[in-house]
Length: 117
View (cartoon, rainbow, N blue to C red):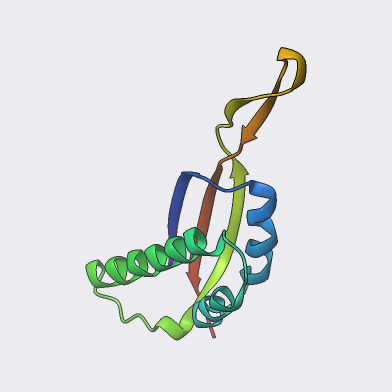
């Protein structure tokens, strides 16, 4: 059984998100949550929220299909962050010129699967 959760247009840079995402790829769900709680980064909150959403999706799917699901058997099979829309802003600079500020967004996808023994 595989379960997917997607968060689109999250206000975090994909480059910064990938640093945290690489830490939890392939880990069990409980271990991934513990890692995210220990990380000192602002991108951990949306990723943790997405992971909890994927766990809830797995519980719902198991209940709907009348399967017996143990959370210890779930692991992070895939997780990746793709660049989303870039918000472009201007900042005034010297002599009437301006600089562009690029506020990047990400589309984060997580896939959980049941580990077969």
